[in-house]
Length: 100
Image 1 (cartoon, helix red, strand yellow):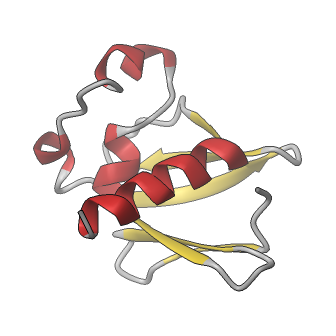
Image 2: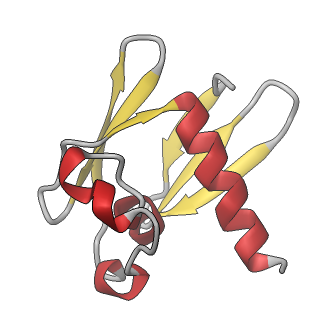
């Protein structure tokens, strides 16, 4: 799912992803950091430690080709490449965690 637009909230705590079919996902920075698809974080994806990332903010986002996003976090982590599909998958996972 390719997003129509992506915005960082003014407080740098959320990433808002808008899709063509008027669907929007809002992902907190701590959740994105915990689910970073970087090689160094792969072992933590099965059971991410969300509480360790509560104070981490989004410093910047960079588009990677036409397929992904690189997110630079306040702890200087910047090696995860978030494909559009992966962002959508974890966005749905986060939404579902709010409404069990």
